[in-house]
Image (cartoon, rainbow, N blue to C red):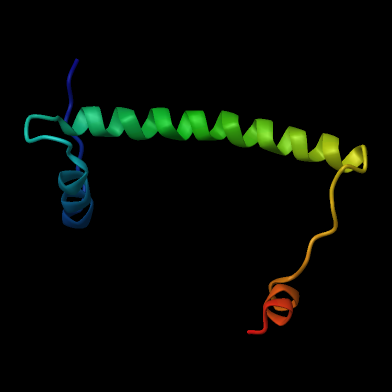
Amino acid sequence: METTIQVSKDLLEKLQKMKMHNKESYEDIIWDLIEDRMELSEETKKSIAEYERDLKEGKLKSFKSLDQVKKELGF
């Protein structure tokens, strides 16, 4: 069953700009966005798990603040 959805003019313009070619449907664009978000979510979960493991194992180097880096570089 197909249905229509209502979007703002701003969103419609953004979707139009995202089209790779004129015949690409908005549904294709939305599916691509959903897939990207799902992949990113899994990738993010993995990165967090690795960070937590490294933190527990003491593998992380100390971090510098932006101000410290600027000072070192002479900014």
